[in-house]
Image (cartoon, rainbow, N blue to C red; front, side, top):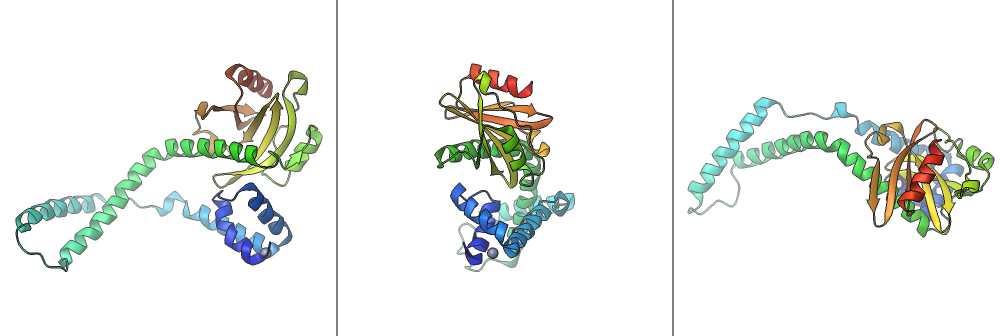
Length: 256
Ligand SMILES: [Zn+2]
């Protein structure tokens, strides 16, 4: 991959929109190219800065009242004007009202947005986790490092994610460690432990604490189940198509 292609893919990468092959090709380039790695870090930092709640402003009460008044006035004059030929150009006050309404709509959406953020994050997060699991199943291999040896898998995560997860093998109990991978969930890089139980693949996502608080304990989609657990003190989510009993057994082992 050349720098031009890499820089065109950086935003999609941060949005989690690349498939795993593309993401891996980009990561290989980023490992070798300090300039593109710097561009990614910069873009990531900008995104974080723009999410700062301090940048958002709610409309003042006085403005809300004026908008209400303008809307009432506008509705009245629309009714009286309906049988008269109308000027093609909107009057200045209509334009002004439109601007105020747009601002107010933005402001009230923001209020709504704030109230639904927690639930919205949870929904988006669980959607991302299911999508990551399915993407991995569809890929040539559901892991980036293949090993049943926790002494191989754990160090592999070091340097790739902020906190290396607790890695254990449960082959004796029927849940064999198969490997690990890094995936993007939202815009966070997360460690994924991959286990195998019979014909079932199991992903264990180790989540940033801030995200996990919003996630419910269990979610289901198209025959797959997501269950949140605590793995060595870190919040985590299991995604798999195992049945409830198998999942409970596995969750019990992980949390022991
Ligand atoms: Zn480059």
